[in-house]
Image (tube, rainbow, N blue to C red; front, side):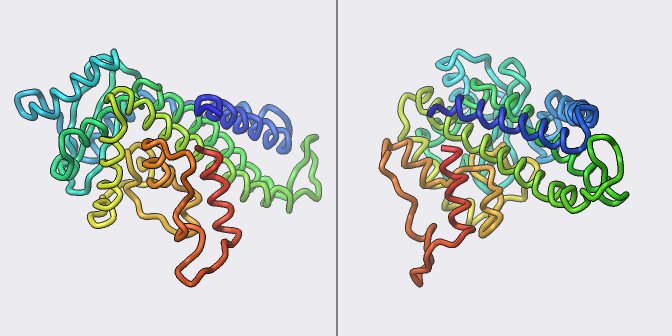
Amino acid sequence: MGNNFKTTILLALLTAFILWVGNLLGGPQGMVIALIFAGGMNLISYWYSDRIVLKMYNAHEVSESHAPELYGMVRELAGQARLPMPKVYIIPQDSPNAFATGRDPEHAVVAVTEGLLKILNAEELKGVLAHELAHVNNRDILIGTIAATLAGAIMILASMARWGAIFGGFNRNGEGGSNIFGLIAMSIFAPMAAMLIQMAISRSREYMADSTGAKFAGHSEGLAMALEKLGAYSKKVPMDANPSTAHMFIVNPLTAGGLMGLFSTHPPLEERIAKLRGRKDFQPPQGSHQDSGGRKPDMKDQAKATWDRLSR
């Protein structure tokens, strides 16, 4: 199943979820209000997210005279991808990472950390930059904004449900009733489900950016080697990152183990590297399914594996 088709299915699932929750709360009126409110918030984010995130990380724009190798490589890859030349920024952090932002290819930005430039060779850096340009080419900023809008609407509806439960609950006719416990349960689990679907969309787009980026670079080994290095170094040199921007980076800047792994915006690096190297028969390392004592997978492990499979 192609990643674009998976993304379409997941977005449709989010939409259906909104319809179900809105209907449960009392029909389409609350649903429309939630969509308008969430859409307004994310429209602002879509237009100004590049300025916000670059300022958040104190990134500074560089020209060809200041960073000739980096700038020239971005220009070469943009030409191969038939994309407009994006702006190039450097983030003053030692943790190796990179991201792309901008509402469309004409307003794109590629940003890398100082740490990334220090540890990668030319082929690895080319692979990372190609991955980021793939996000621009695939319109992932727009897709992410749509997913955030739908997920945000569900969370607003869930908040309405909590208030409805506080004031005695209501049914479709607006009458008081005994639906309080149902509203409370829905207000808890609906946002969690929406977040999981949104994360699955983000993971699916990462796989697609890896594949598209490998085509832009001419081969996949540079990106595969870069991901291996980034996986090792990012654990040793953690990044001072805002969780709300974690999905933008090429590797997750946050260390999230255990249950939080369910909400990771990135697929496992081992699987991404295996796909880049054509290992379709790849199986996750044993350590991801059982500990050193031979523990069998529990429900938490199985749930994480399910969401990993969904986003491949």
